Structure formats: C-alpha cells, structure tokens
Length: 147
Ligand code: DQA
Image 1 (cartoon, rainbow, N blue to C red):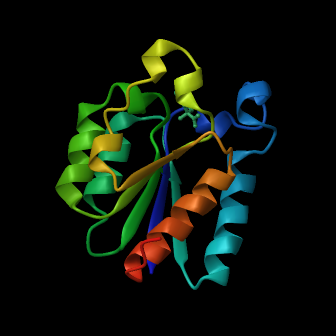
Image 2 (tube, rainbow, N blue to C red):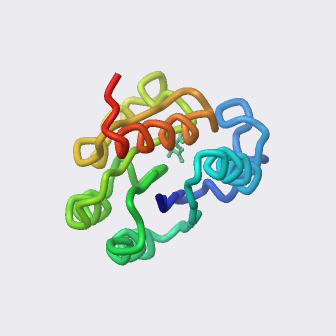
C-alpha cells in the first residue's frame, strides 16, 4: 500500500510554531515517526509539504495511479479551500483529514472544514499521533475491517 501524506501551510514551522498548541516536534520528526510506523505495517509513504494551495491541488491531482490513499493536514486551507476539496473529490482516493489541535476548541473560524466532508474520516486533537491513527484506519479500511 502506498500512502501520500500532505501537510499544508505553516506546518513546516512546527517545532517553533506555537509549541503550546502544536507541541515541540518538527514536521520532519513527525513524518519520520510515521514512516517507521508505516514500515512496520508494510506501507510505503511519500510526504509532501507546501505553503502553496495550487501545489497541494496539483499534488492531489497527480496522485491517482501511484497512491492508494491520502492523509492530509490542509492546515489553514481546511477552512477556506474549495480547490483542495474539489481535488480530493476529483481524485477519488480514500483520504483522511488530520489536525494536530482540536480545532473545535479554538477560534470559531476554525470550526468549519471545507475538506472533511469529502474525506472518509477526520482525526483531531491528538497531536502527531493523529497521523498514525489515520494510517491505521486506512490500512484497516483497505483490508475491509470496520470495527
Ligand atoms: C491545524 C489547525 C488549523 O486551523 C491551522 O490553521 C493549522 C494547523 C492543526 O493541525 O491543528 O495550521 O491544521
């Protein structure tokens, strides 16, 4: 199984960005831990980060045929991007949305996700463990398991 992991704007700043909200780990450290977990399940990962909406749209659009599933933290674009939502719908791969923080416990403008309705699920509030939960969910789903 090949999984594409997409991280959106400002997530490249993790480690120093609002550590009270997002923790002290860098994105590279999070993705390395995820890669090790994926490896233990026989899953290949490709990790992509961009601050640019169009690059994220293009990466999703070119993922069909190469990847079996997508894990995405669209970051601030979660709350604004019809283009990323349409890309997820258009590519027709199972996609899980992850947020490090519980966006419902934060400012009101973070309560709405434009992308979650076109994903198979959404995980938030567990920090970097959320990526692992998303991967486990996608692996179980691919195996036809539904608890
Ligand atoms: C975030 C939540 C978003 O509201 C915010 O814009 C981010 C990070 C999270 O992982 O908690 O950049 O997606």
